[in-house]
Image (cartoon, rainbow over all chains, first blue to last red; front, side):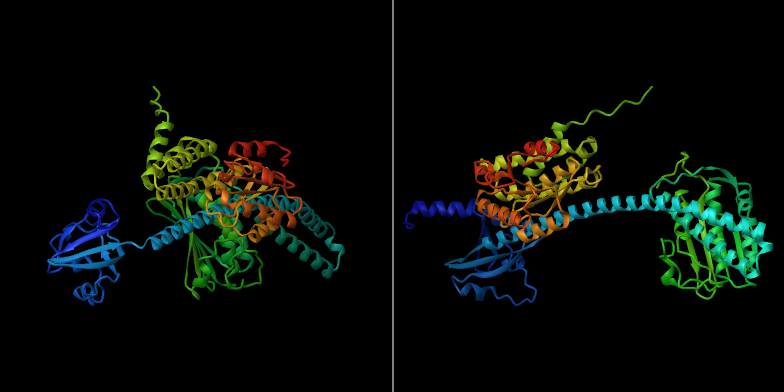
Length: 381
Length: 223
């Protein structure tokens, strides 16, 4: 049947014009003298008239094209460098002709199908994983919100009885202390100190739950550096004095003002100074200083304590993270203060960071933008 | 004087460009249209129904009529599926009703976008829609049911050749979880087959996404 010239002509026309087969006519020196429509599309433009070997990827330069052609009807896997820039492997058969060689190359259909199925399958899996990831994130956000609500409620409910314990312990010490033995007065002082520590912890939880739930409200108002320091210095001197630490204040006042929530900023500075005092030994110094750069007010709290190891520095501003160094008088904390400080400073549009070399003290710095862009009284995270 | 308001978004024109992108496998063109649509509408349902579902039906129709190749159809589906990812930050942030569904395709069923749109439809209606994916073995479905304790399990079948596998999967799920309602649906039921699963206890066949949505919105959620 295939001897029929009409069939042969139809097959030739199909191969030459439309079939996804590469048909190349090579001259006696194996240069591409003719190419069907598919080959002209796939091969790089300059293929015609050039040796076929220039179109083949041959990393080892070991390809012996004449030897392959001499093998006649065998199928040889050859990789072409194509116009798209992607190499493509085809199965080639070579048919020697009186004045040249006919080269016919085609893709492995099953291999292509497998490749397509695998790529589509992997794409599907990737999409499913992306969906699961978004869903899990949404669920985690919901759980985090629930945690914040619980934390806020629990902290709020615990605050009142602790306030009662503190008030009545102070009351008994003040009013009836004289009638008690020194040992019993000491018991009451321990109760008071424990309740004070617990109140600090609960206040931290409350602050954190408010900030994390996105409900932090900043009451922004214009303030100068001396005004900010005035709210901090008396308490800071008291904290330092109790441990015989010298507090040195060096504030640059050039009359510039900035918009801040002064009470929250005072809380941040007192936390930093408190940490500096707690990590210092009696006789050492703590500095509170400020300077202006072009855009920011930079406040710094520096101490002469043991410093903070590089591996601890990165996580220090996250919740419940504590440096490996011990506080010098065994003071306790849960590691919320710096996390809260970071969130408050960031709510102001500023940033907080740390510079420390172990053994040479630590400096905590916070930069607050002079032109605070926030116009709302509410600064939500 | 108020500044001139921007012209209203031309949804039909964007749809045509999106469909053209799918048919020419132009992912970037599709992405631009999808993002513009997403920005123009606050209602995700419109995007699902009038862009994604409509275009996929049109692509499927063109394939059935021999106007496009199976490769083009597969790539169009893959593009649509990957673009659905852009809706997820909004989809999963919607308020929840406290109900959930486990949605999956049965073993040897490789067409998953229908099932994924079912899971997303549950999300659109305030349910959690957990989706397992194509070609999921029954034991994996059972594990997720045990973990999530869903209010319903939905099985999607695109190919009529998978109906026997579906019926067998329903039986296995039912024996492990006697009370969980099971919904089945998908393109496989276009030419019949519902009667084969409708007689199974606690199983309901739903023939379209709108039928499914009606079922979700019915507070009783009977099968």
